[in-house]
Amino acid sequence: MLDRQRAARLIAVPGIALASITGMVGTFLGVFWMISMVVPGTASLLLYPHPKLMTFGFVYGFIQSVALVLVPRFRNVDVSTGKRLKATTLAAHQIGVLLGAFWPPNSAGWVLGHLLSSSSSSIFAYYVVKTLRRPLGPLGAADPVISLSAVLIPVIVLLTAVAESWGHNPYSRAGMLQLVLYDVAGGMIFGIGIKTIHFRIELAVRRRLWKALFPLLALSASVAIAAFALDDRNLDLLSSVVYAATSLLWILSVDGFKRVKGGEQFHRMIERDRVRYLYFSAAYVIACVWLLVGGLAGISASLLTAIRAPLAFGVRDVFIHALGIGFAGHAIIAYAPLLLPGLLSAKTPYRGLSLYPVALLNAGNLLRSAWFALGTPPLPGLVLATGALYLSAALTTLIVVHTLR
Image (cartoon, rainbow, N blue to C red; front, side, top):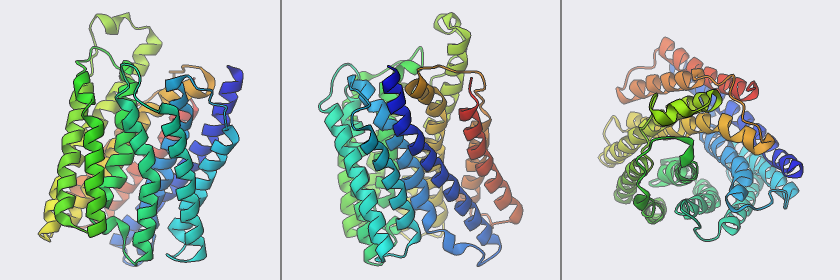
C-alpha cells in the first residue's frame, strides 16, 4: 500500500504542480489581455498563448495527472507500473505546451513543443485505453467515454499544429472549440461523474441513459473534426447541438441538480462525510448549471457566427468560459480536495474545506459572461473586478487544497 501511495505521489504531485503553474501563468495572461482592452496595446499579444496554457497546460495537464493514478483504481491495477515513464510523460507534455504557446509557428521550438505534447499525450491515451479495455461492471458505461476523451487529446494537439502551420488561428476554425472543451474536458468529467456517483446521495440515477453517452460523444467529435477540416459553419452548428443534447442527457442521468440538506441518509452521515458532501454537491450543481449555459451559448455562437452578427464574439466568449471555467473549473474545485488526498495518502481530510473558491470563481465568470453577452464596453472597474475574482479563486483553491486536515 505504501509503495502504491509513493508511486501515486511521484506521478501526480509534480504533474499537478506543473499544471497549476501553467494555469496561473495562463490566468495572468488572460487578465493582462482584458486590461489591454482598456489600455490598448499593453498586452494584446498575450492573448494567443492564453488558450493553450489554460486548456492544454492546465485542464489537460490536471486531467492527465489525476487519471494516471485514478484509472488504475477502476481496474485494481498497480499504479507503480511504469511510474517514472508516467511522471516523465506529464513533464514532457507541459514543456511541449510552453514551447508551442510561446514559440512562433513553424519555428524549431514550436515543432519540438508539438512533438512533445502529441507524443506524451499519445502515451497517456495508450495507457488509459489499455487499462480500461472494454466496459466492465455497473459503471462500465463510463469506460469508453473516458477512453475517448484520452484519445482525443493527441488528436487535438495535432489538429492545432496543422492549423497553425497553415497560418490559421485554430480556435477560430469551425469545430475546434467543441473538440477542445466538450470532448476532452467534458467527456472526462462525464466519465468520472459516473464513476464517482456514490459521492452524492438520494439520487434518481438513470443508468440506461449512460449507454447513449459514448455514441453521442463519438458522433459529435466526428462532426466537429469534419467541421474543422472543412471550416464548415453548418457542421459546427450541428456539433454544438449534439454536444448540448449530450450534456443535458448526462445531467439527467446523474441527477446533476440534486443536493439535499436533510433526510435519513444525510443525518446518518458522520461530520466528516457531511462536510465533504455539502462542499462537493454545491460545486457539482454549479458546474452542471454552467454546462447547460455553455451548451446554449455554443449553439447561439454557432448561429451568430454563421450570419456574422455583431454579438457573435461576445456570445462565443461566454461559450468558451462557461465550459472552460464555469463547468471544468468548478468540477476541478469539486473533485480536487476529495480525490487527491485519498489517491496520494489514503487520508480523508475535511477540515478547511471552503466554498470561497466556488463563490469567487462563479462571481468572476458571471461578471465576465454578462459583460461579453451584453456587449458592455470594457470599463476599467469591470476589467479589474473580473480579473481580481479569477485570480482570487485560483489562489484560494490552492490554499484550500494545501491546508486540508
